[in-house]
Picture 1 (cartoon, rainbow, N blue to C red):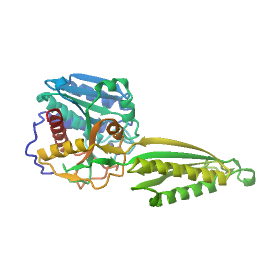
Picture 2: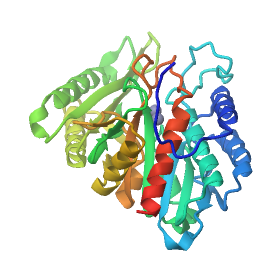
Picture 3: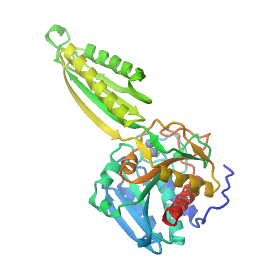
Picture 4: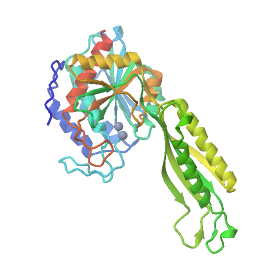
Amino acid sequence: MSSMSFSSSPISIPDLKEIVTLRHHLHQHPELSGLEYETSHTLQNFLQRYQPDEIVSELGDTGFAAIFHGKKPDAGPTVLFRAELDALPILEKNELTYTSIQKGVSHKCGHDGHMATLVGLASMLHQQPLSKGRVVLLFQPAEETGAGAWAVLHTPAFQKIAPDYVFALHNLPPLPMGHVLVRSDAFAAASVGLKIQLYGKESHAAEPENGQNPGEGMSELIQAFTILARDQHHFQDLTLLTVVHARLGDVAFGTNPGFATVMATLRAFEQDDLNKLKSLAIEAVKLVSHKYNLKYNSEWVEEFPATKNSAEATALVKQAALDLNMDVIRAVKPVRWSEDFGHFTNLYKGAYFGLGSGPNRPQLHHADYDFPDELIPVGASLFYRIAESVTNP
Ligand SMILES: [Zn+2]
Ligand SMILES: [Zn+2]
């Protein structure tokens, strides 16, 4: 497939074949956000062979951490690496020997590969423990809904882990295989979902004058939202508002509908811009509901903070990649998608970075995506090198 050669991969992974098989097993048995019980169980069982010094379970329900001590654990810092446990509600279109057996659920973000990468790191730490400090391998639930990182951070058992540094990678098509994408400060956008309900009054379709149909208000709101997103002069940097769903009443020709739903996703690279966009959106809702005499209800869902990297941690990633002869690319702009790792980097020194999974690969979240196995040792070696340089500078 690819002809990568990394001159100084610190340690080989003797059981790489079994780890690849594990990845395929996880791929074949995907679980949705918050329901990753089997995935978590499978990983905890598999990791036993590396004799972690501690396992902290039930982090945000299905999540857990496997902790590997250095030879002198108290003489160095604690460095955390995160992988995500969840799959997506997407029907897999691949014909693999390990195609998902869960109809309509599949690993289309490559989280199966991220988990296998952390397992590869466990194998390396078992063979060659670090001289100082501790390495925490965190398997986090529910990244795709933005709920998992928050839940882990608010589990009392996590407070005891108290990492000094946190790192996570995301496989990234179409970036060339094994290239490392870094960015100091904002790496990924902040985003939030907005759900608006407009309430009028139902009546018989033959007597619309006796009801209050919210259709006109709904269409005006969709227009207002679209204009908001177009008007970039309000904002410091890229800001997006995408109407993702709309519905007017139920399907019934005899009924003049009494309610409508409009849903949108709001995004920004800067938290201030997102806050501004949020208040502008609510203002638009108030105007429309007032104009058409409708009641409304608004709800914010799936909130992701911007993922902000520390300059120090970003430099550590970059240096580790260079040590391994990997190509490093500095991202000019943050990526547009969102990532709940921002909850970690808001609290701890850390960095989130991209690892190229090749140009001829479908995009993330596409029905035919599959994580490339050859990236497992690449990611694991990079994490190991980062752990070495953090704990023994
Ligand atoms: Zn995803
Ligand atoms: Zn992902």
